[in-house]
Image (cartoon, rainbow, N blue to C red; front, side, top):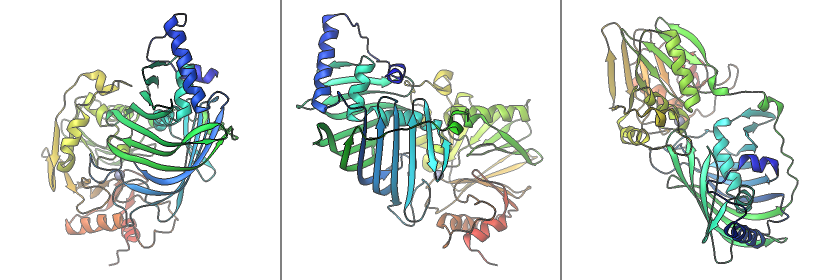
Length: 478
Ligand SMILES: [Zn+2]
């Protein structure tokens, strides 16, 4: 229980010795009894349905792309604040529309949380995913038994038919009880690097008894107004084995987002890598342009620091946003907090304006603390930034089904093309996808139709490669 008490602090005041507090305790215990939570230390649930990847829509501010969930297994250990989700899924659309990993056919995703650590498992390898910590903590404590355990451990308060609970810095929530004192709904505000405070709702219906423990067999989650999960639960095992331990590699990883490596790609052009998402710093006569502020504050602030180390005497004037997907725009607010003008495709201009007007009360970020106001500028087909010495062309990747606001950056003198997600070079000796990814084909077509003379591609995932690598991947023959 120690972990619980450390993790959970009620957002409401509790004064343990008053009659009111005793009433509150009794009321919470009644809810725990209705749910069969008293002797429940862990739980395993199984089911299937649909998953929708929040932050990866085709159009900014619209529905998340759908995946069919063939099987979903969730194991929760309430005593150690641990959770493991195994999801076997396929994309609902083939070819896909929108983001999220493009894997053909069935694939498995494993997401794990234990205490303050979040990580993913791919094959045998554990990859730290601290960016997912707040969301996974929410997933754990918003389970029906999680709500009551969080409230009781953190001295949460029941008022009328709602229980207030939360994890400071991650989320705050209220759960609503139905007539049978079962949790029917959780309304939460979740800390999110892109949108600041993100509204999330979970609804629970059709509770059944599983060996003395009540659990809903229909679960629906809504993120920012759109479905994120629709699950039919088929099996529940109270007190199932749930030995989830943090791998040493995850414990020792530190913060992966602050690791920055710069490579000079040409005079005044640096490819800034070191993690999963890259940026490019371009030096102009009296200012800098940064292409891509990915992931979160930690990453974006590390990139900003690196840009200032590379060119100490010139301010960053523009940030070019490749597209609106959460992993590529999680640093937009940090750049805005430095007063940098944001350049995005016209299709996402209103969305980005909303992003830099949104509050972040659960976890006040760099932008929220800065009090800055910034300009957002749109590009439709093409915009040229020049100062007489260098030309930077920002162009749309037209027609690509990954997102409707995809921008690429072309440097005509260097013959560089900077782009995200349209083409990510595979490992050097990996076989190309067959048939080719439609995203790769779109990029190759755009380069040809827009008449770009490209020598090297600087992808915002992966590694710098000659254009021939894209042609090979896209099945282009000359
Ligand atoms: Zn994307």
